[in-house]
Amino acid sequence: MAFLMSAVDVAAPSGVWEWFILNVFGFISNYGWRVVVFVILLKLVLSPLDFYQRYKMRKNQRITEALKPQLEKLEKQYGNDKEALQRKQMELNKKAGFSYMSACIPLIITLVLFITFYTALRSVSAYMEFKQYVEMYDSYVTAYEDSGFDYTSRVNKNFAFNSGDINYAEIDAWLNKVVKDEETINSYIDSEEISELFAAVTVNNPAKTLMRYKTDYIDQGKSYSDYVSEHRGDTISNKETADFNLAMSILMQVRAQEATVKAFEENRTSFLWIKSLWVADVPWANSVPDWSTFKRTMSSIKKYHYLEWDANPGKVYTDNQTMFNDMADPDGTTNGLTYKIVTAKVRDNSKLYKTNGYLIMVILVVGLSLLSQFITTRQQKQSGQLNQAQAGAGMMKMMMWIMPLMLAAFALSSSSAFTLYMVTNSAMSLIINFITTLIVNLMDGGFKKKNTVVVKHGRLDPNDRINKK
Image (cartoon, rainbow, N blue to C red; front, side, top):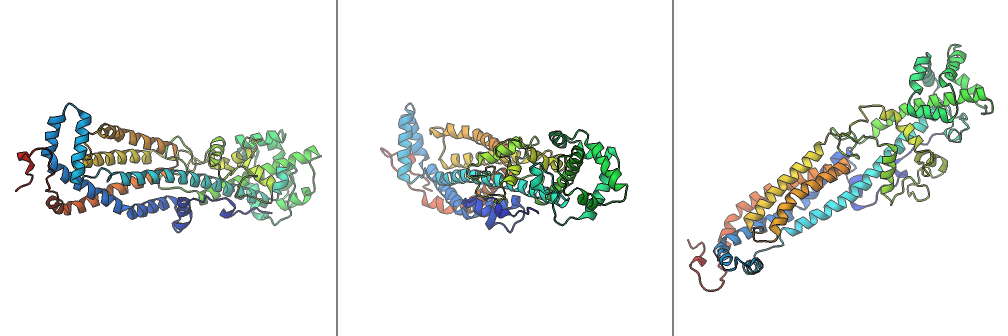
């Protein structure tokens, strides 16, 4: 009996952004490029708002230039009363058609997208991590059963053999390699997880027990099929027989673990230098989280209850709660022992496991944010939307440094998928900013002609004749 899984058995997130990433862009196999393409297209769709913002900012700039003499006069008149000065400046700007809200709309939309994308990619990351584990577990169980054991009975500590089709030739070749001497056997059973399992089933000398298989079967020219036939009906009542079957069962477990490495390599979601897109791009994080981190991540997405049988909408192994409990350890009774065993060989492989990333995405996020803040602040100063007399000037200066730090915090604590979204979004914003600014510059002649209007304030001043020439 094999427990072949399909993705539909794991409850996929149901939000709008999640649906786009998981389904609409499903024709792109790599999830990293899905995020990149999706964000690029989204930014292009929203680019008219960026053009509107640049257009308004340039119009404000021309209005500010036209009102400069009158603004200077107000500064002399109300220089000692900052509140009155600001009020008078706003009144003058309003009469001239100055727009204070033009920069707010794209900012609000960007903030909404940031929050909703953060939530969506948290859900997608948890889903993909759980799905990845389910695929590894299923490969583990299938390979275990192909070795001749009924996995469900093994969970129940009966260690019975199944009656399914077994590839004996493949197992014979593997066993001949593993049990050629005691040193080789030990190399297969000395991992921390396997040692724990041997201790749990009270096999005192697994190497010696497994050497019996070499002596009684391999050296006698017998096949694994002979061993299965002889022990198929055995119970655990006889200590010697029980030790032999337990030791063989655990040895077959090592073979099953090797299948999980292949499953991980085939299904893992790497991107460029990042080993796992669902883990932060940092050198101190591993592509496969430890049990406590994995459990905490699954529990954080309360809507899907991935590790809870009663509430899990995906109902993995819906007809076999024993299998689900073995996989998910919902009560924490084994401290994630199965998870540790299933992922052990992957975590032993430094090429697959250690150092998920190198902070490259984090550095890009901070650098692009600083550049974007600098350009935006400069444009707002030129347009007159930001000056020293306005109360928001100090806040904007503060945000120029606070925003990159906030994004760095998100990048360090979030999945690489979300950091990739931030990098792509920032890069596209800079490109669109550059293009729309060029277009607005070409239209600048119209601004100059249109905004030679004089807004009179108080008695006539010689300087009111603006752009007369």
